[in-house]
Image (cartoon, rainbow, N blue to C red; front, side, top):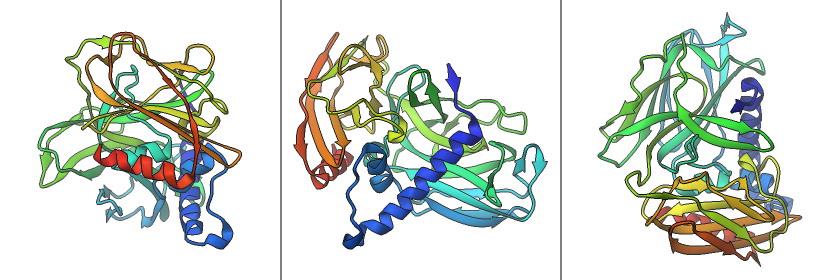
Length: 327
C-alpha cells in the first residue's frame, strides 16, 4: 500500500476545495452558468465549500467553522521543511458532517481494510505560508471539536489516498508523530455536544466507528449495465461514474472502486455485513449529461447488483443525494 506525496496531496485537495468556493459563488449567477460537465466539476460545485482563516503563528488561535467545528491551534505549530514558520499562515478547511457532504464531494467512509465505517463527521485541514504548504507533521498538537448529537464514543482516524492503478480514499488509525500525536487518545466521548480530540498532523481527520461489525461478512459486486464512462476516482480526479452503498439509518457511505470485469466493481473480500439494509446508488456526469440509478436492498451472501443508469438532470441528482441525509 502506497500513499501520495503528502504535500502534493494536500495541495490538490486544498485547490479542489477552493474551486468549490468559486463554483458556489458562480452558482448564484445564472448568467455565468452553473452546470458541471464532468465528475470533477460536480464535486467542486456541490461538495463542501472551502473555508479560509488567516492566523498569526506566534499566537494561540481558536476559530469555529461554518458547520460548528471548533479548532484551536497553539503558537509555533507549523514548520516548512523542518524550519519553524513565523508570521501569518492561511488555514484552508473543509467540513464533511452530513452524508450528502460525503457523496457530493466524491469521498467515502471506507476503512483501509475496505470495511464500511459509520461517520460521525470529518474535516480536512491545510495550512500555507506565502503560498507554500507547511509540513504535514505539526510541531504541536492542534485541538479539534466536531459537533455531534450522539451519546456513544467514537474513534479517531486519518485519511490517506491509496494508489495503484487508481487514486482512492480510505481511513486508517493515526500514524504516530514524534512531535506529539503518539499516545494521544484515539477514542473520544461526547462532551457538551462535541467530540474533542487532538491531532499532530494536517490533512483528513475523522470521527468514525465500524459499521455492523457483528454481522457475518460477504463480498458484494455491482455492475453498471450502461456505464457511459469510466469509474471515478477520489473526488472525481479522473473518471465519471461513482458507486456507493449507503446504509439505512446510519451515516455510511461505502464506495466501490475495485474493478471486477467489464463495468463491474466489487467490495473488498468478505467485508460487507450480511443483513444490512441500505441503498446502492450510482451517478455519472460526462460531457454535461447526468445519469443516476439506485436500488434499495438487504445485503445477502455473494450479492451481485446490476444498476441501469437513466439520463436525468443535475437538480434531480442533487435532490437524490440530499435525501440521503434522512435515509
